[in-house]
Length: 416
Image (cartoon, rainbow, N blue to C red; front, side, top):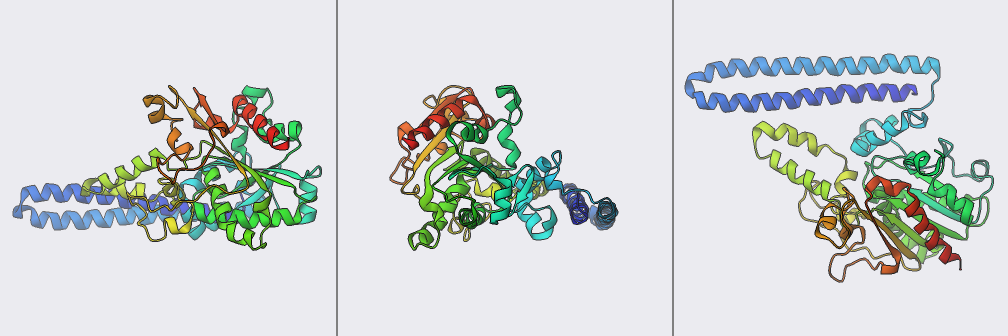
């Protein structure tokens, strides 16, 4: 890791442990208060002493662990500076951990520990690619005019697209992108981003990135396909929605080049797991003894919280409470001028059965994957453009022969 990464990692570890100790103190204090209330006035003097000693002890332990974490970070930073080691975000074994950390607390990292926060970047061979003509020519020597842009989901990185590659294809490097390049001549472009940020913020950055990418691409771009897994599909829709006005004025060219989007297990109407976690957080806050646990849950990233209702734009969340139970999401229609494909999965049953509808792919239900609100705000996916697979879970949509077969069929038809 780089020196600044080590320094910020130490600070984060210290602050996290200190927060954990503070939570333990909150639980301890709540239980003690409950006990002393049962004892009554006779225990008042003892309670004062108890509370003072407990507070001082927890504060001392928390401060000591925080200092130890910071000191460890400084030592590691000096060693990293001397050794000249690569960034965590570029190390094969570490970047997946960094992706998880960003998904869980990416907004916190961006604000307080920026050395650990991922930026939105084009990736090639495990490194960022500058959006400049020379850098893009070097990274994509065989660049084609047709581009397939891949957007990973929550807590993932570009490495997620190789999920079970060796098992499915006998080659750990085989992905949808490599097969589309081989079979249909698309150049795959892998995007990595901080999935703990607001989806609207990542959508805005994707708009800017694709604007620069098209301007600097080695050859004139004739076609863009956006392929997003889970949250990645929402980021793609957010970028198209936010780029809409500029495209109409001729300020941004890339949206006019998008002739297809593919969303793989994308929660267009929200993810039930985040809804359940939010309800649990509200329940934990009702009792003093569990309020500390509720505070821990509340610290999950704003990116995760956006998945509760499938928020795409800043207006969906800016005036709402972070843990609101009722959606304030506005309707965002599918991008005009492109075909929009959906792949969804059910682990048990089918999308037509009650069990299949309830379980979905374990993280996203079929009704959310197709954006079926049951009214005029329903997303206008055509039935022929929806692929429903059974016996598969959410992560298998990242790299599975059955999904690729459908991708190949759809994208082949666009070229005809």
